[in-house]
Image (tube, rainbow, N blue to C red):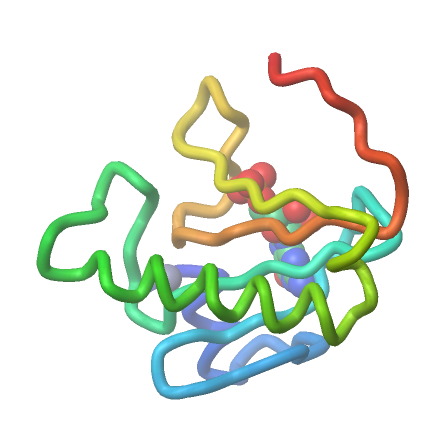
Length: 113
Ligand code: 5GP
Ligand code: ZN
């Protein structure tokens, strides 16, 4: 499958890895929008939130466990941070492999749209 994040997970395209286990991979965003900007992705190819089902949704709760762990390790847990996933054109999704942005290290803008 011609998917950028599948290639990052397999190592075909290099990335700055932050965390990896059997089902999840996390790496620094190439164009950070905040002092801490990590992408957390399921290893299984799921295109977006639109593709989440009863069969594959367990990895989503695991991703939030990883987000909590990484926020502590990266020193942003106490001051606060944001976990964001964009779905589809109106949200500006550019990579169609489900990913969660972990953003922190500064006061984040509050606009939702
Ligand atoms: P989206 O806009 O789909 O929510 O987020 C995609 C994110 O992937 C963007 O923040 C973008 O900077 C990041 N990104 C795109 N290509 C690469 C890449 O090759 N390596 C890394 N580490 N991040 C990437
Ligand atoms: Zn993929």
